[in-house]
Length: 153
Length: 86
Image (cartoon, rainbow over all chains, first blue to last red; front, side):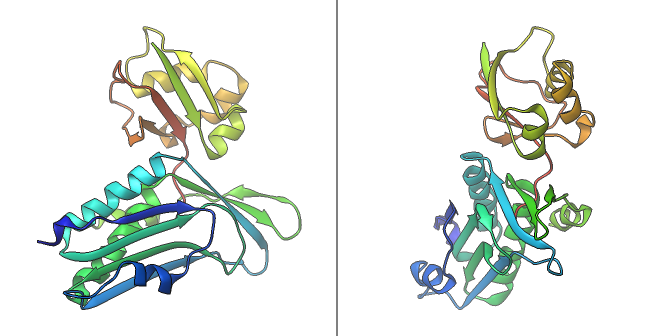
């Protein structure tokens, strides 16, 4: 049973490097599939200057760990990581990384998708927009589609 | 029993404070009671909590529905808008 693995969960201001994180998970042995998802900051047709990512320290890590552990219970994973950035993030820069490893691709794809769907609606992070024209942007509103994406699991 | 309240995103901006410590009045039993109580504390609170149904609440770092009682051992209560990470 792969339920014994411990997920890597981090909240950090610094950027992450996908190759480094994949290597750190040391797949090998029974890992036959490694699925990665990277969420990036869009430029919204040139109107977005930056996103400010706020989080609830302590709970963000705790909730990401709860989500990761649920994925580990549901799929036979050999590796799992969830890394989320905070602070000021420019268009094109990384926001979030999820890596899921398993013996076969089905579980790895599903687990990565599950973790992202729950992370978006349950992990305490909020995005505020800063506009390129200097005006103060709004807080990004949660989308109904994100809640629906979570409920399908 | 004093309890620490922490606020995030536009809830924090409208209330005008990131955290405070209050004594929970006897009349506050559930999460919904707390939102009701806070809404009456001033203009900023009223603006932040005008649509209480959209406010998300966490007791000691765990998401908690509005109809749940607030245990006497709870130390930190967070109020925030729907989350938009990822």
